[in-house]
Length: 225
Image (cartoon, rainbow, N blue to C red):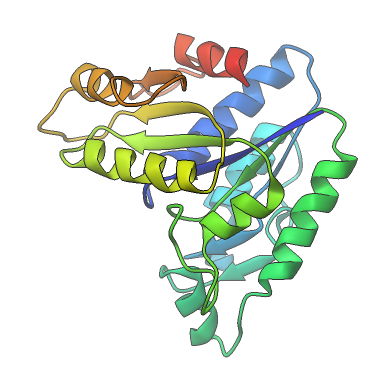
């Protein structure tokens, strides 16, 4: 069994797309795989079938039902804001120790590869004191860092790598998910990040045409996990 925490430099970068693609690839290879996305903001029950939680369930070959969504994403909030603010809008708060405990229990019982997908970037607040970074650190598992190729992504990526290094969190790989539109090319962004990434593999993931399920980049990522 192995587990990896899928995180990013921000929101709408491609975490769920990458996670779902890796799940489908590993399943087609006959591997046991599971996923958990405990905290979700911007969740609308009327469009649950297109939510990130549903995308992961579909990749896992599971039914998209309220029960399955609650299992994979127990903390769901409607407002598309940072989780702490979204929870407060509903008169609630995120029980971060409970999120960590659920993650640990899921890791302990996983029979194959487990993907735990975070929310937003590594410094997103979960409550008044703790961030996604604290969550990752508590689990003591590697991070799969998904970043964009937009102008400014290099700085955001190197900053994220520094805070992960400061907490001694291993980075399994950095995936540069092509942003569109962007003033800089995917290759230029990938090469620039790679110069500062140390031993972490840096893998370029281009935008895929409709109907294309896999790209060689998914195989590259799977090999290093």
